[in-house]
Length: 300
View 1 (cartoon, rainbow, N blue to C red):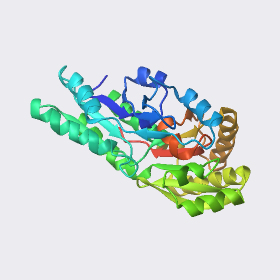
View 2: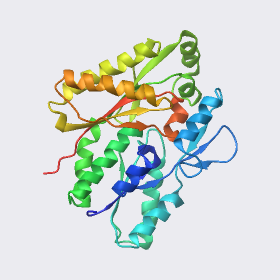
View 3: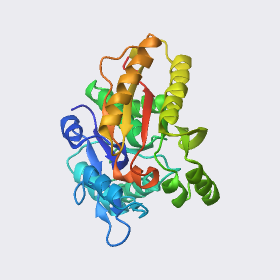
């Protein structure tokens, strides 16, 4: 399996099948369904169950919590005791303290295992784009790239990561403090859907539209501009669709993304459609939909 073990926090939004197939260790977040105890991501509640709860409980806002220092420390120690090197990839620190928590756990680990080789990366992304980043780490690992060189090559592609997306309602972003409360109320009344870009580790407004259809059109438009400006060949990047509750909408959207790529001469045989996890949907609500793009890491 190469020179190192790939670890990701639960924001990477890969399926359990991919985690198993690629040998990725996932350290889960926790979610709370409005009130009560925090539930461990995927163990206590699946992503599908979480979306069903959200759709059935409109106006009730769930919460999320990062993995604890002990969660990271336990996992790190388990692998280091076997003599393994570790590469841990975390959600952008602009959204979570997961990266800082993992760094603290690494320092604690080194007190007992001073020769341990553990690298912790702030990937400057989240959700499905983070998943693409984690898979690039696996590709480097499987190609035999050593740990420290893999970190260098991943850092080279970090600035290229983008998520272009829209949401069904601005209420969740407003409730979580991601936008102003007043802006959230006005947008809800007017039926405005924001277009959002994630780059450099944080989110930026990329326009607003009235209605779902126009907001999806705008996501495609700004994605097309970025792809056209950045890539000359489909071999240079990976792309995926991220969605929430409505898979049928995501599949139809993927068909339009195929057409977009073909119009640019950037044909892809397969574009994965991936479920955005509960960790992210506490902020987006049940109907996020978007495109995630990442430059491939070099293997030579």
